[in-house]
Length: 119
Image (cartoon, rainbow, N blue to C red; front, side, top):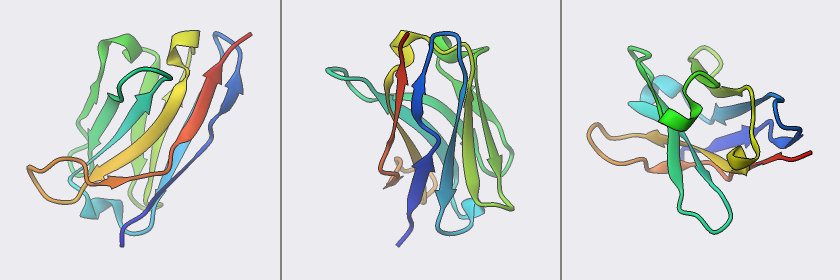
């Protein structure tokens, strides 16, 4: 059974940086797409960024463009999210997810990593 395990969350001051990692139990090239989602208290989960594991095309929501960078190291089976210029509104539980069947929805999820941005 495929598994994703996130790490790298924590508490950071506004303007600071964090880098999230998501290690897959198997080859990331087995997934069609991988992504980072987040869910803030009292809000719905939202997709933050995604990457195609083969052609490495990326997508970002407007609120993180220019601040967050998604990347993947297929040799290490690891997905990353570099987050710079963090703001309190970025506070959320961040989840990595993967698509195992082309054209289908994300069907493999990590357990989540808490990111708190506060002074």
